[in-house]
Length: 389
Image 1: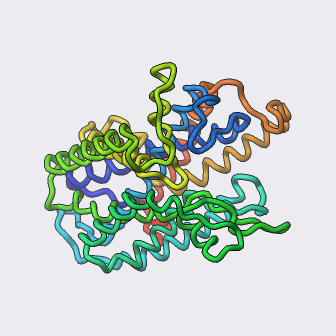
Image 2: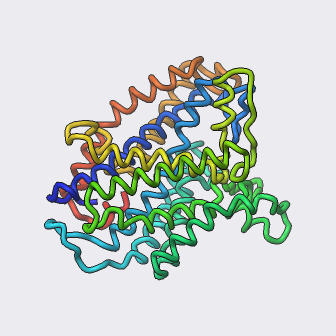
Image 3: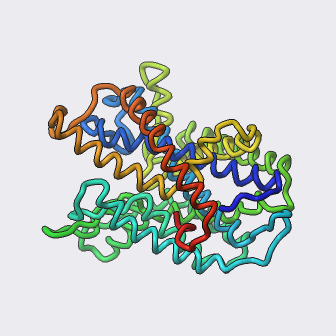
């Protein structure tokens, strides 16, 4: 997204890039955990009886990544369709449908090729994960984008608030409807064979709702809304989302498949309350994570240009960073396995969760330089392929 000369527009774009940058770094921590702490892999929702608080809250932080990315993808699509020039004046609208379809298909291609290979150095199992969810959601938004924005908002709310009511619906393999329902709502294998497997890790229906909400919220960043009024909206959305979370989750009314219970200590009680389902993301999961995103978007728009500039850099080229860090981790794991062997059962790993954070911190420093270079390259060149990264 190009930088605008207007200070309002620059802050607007910078706050979005900083939000993306923050969740990219949180995602890095979680992916380091998936590489070097896999001997203590967590379930979904997590088993608080066997998961330490440090591991629990490390995983909980990663919950913010997917909702933020999908919501901001929808919001960015609205900004693409409603561009502004360097004087902060509206320009003619652009065809967002074509852009969303092309980029959605490109992301799906990356998911089943480069990204799949980065996880296991093979193509025996194609995992349809977060990029699959984003790609399908973009295509769905493209199909629905001709509808009035108010209708998109209503449809997004219906999906996000209503999909938990569909939980009792289930299909077994080879039953009519199983494949479609697995892709939409239930995770699982849609193809298993000796040569190739397809596993849906991110059911897409709730994420389609989130991207619709992001698109409907695009006018928050229009030229008609100044920083003060936008801030009021963001704080209002934060307050409403968090209040609904505590109401529905606190009373175990609706929106989460696993009810929380009082535990023997305050920390484990908090863990029980925040132990939310991600696959598919429950209403409670989305209310809690999107509330945090709204608050941070408000805060990032109010920091000085020199503060947290590194987040802006990471958030300006998210796809480049995403693919780069996955392959760096693949190589790191291979080297570690060669040196130390399988020191944690069939895996190679570290002993403590703080070591995961230290590895991630070191990697963020190392990866900052190629990310900064590519971000500068992207801002100076306008080749069509660059906008996909």
